[in-house]
Length: 198
Image (cartoon, rainbow, N blue to C red; front, top):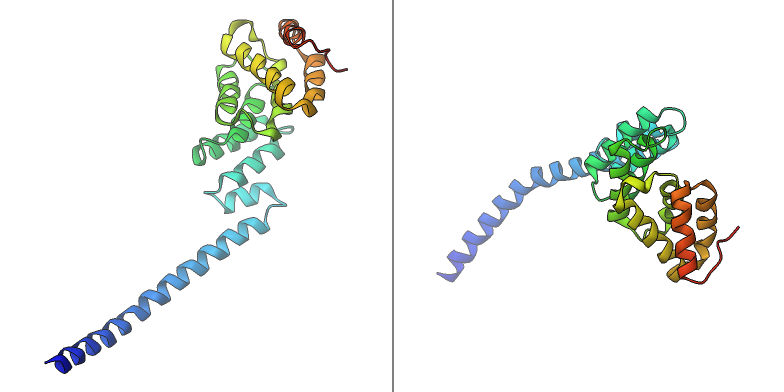
């Protein structure tokens, strides 16, 4: 009885192993195709528009494309940042890019101020964004938006208490700040008993 059972198991195992060969070959082919596609998009990073088009579902490629277009075509940059955000809505860098693209000429534009806020909310402590985001925030008309005032104050406090190596960014922000934002920066430095860097 045991030998009959063992024989039946071996027969079924052979039949199953033959059935798995096409499945394994298909999985291998799909994996190879996806790997080739992924590496192909990486190889095109020198041409951001082509890389983003090839890696259509990769948000970091759309983000890179947006930054290359920001100076020459803010509309194309805005579209690229928006695409990156659809793929990765928690990317603080993409929100900052969208704020940069939409707020270049009009900070009364609600998209620009919302995008800047979202950049802070999704990555307040991202060290690579602290300085450029602070400089951008200093140029915004915060008189109509208490959230932006709060973000400006919190960012300055963060730098003064936890990232003193970034104090130079506050000096840069102070030079380009609106009058209202200069007063906010001055008040934060006064409270901390420090002087604004040149």
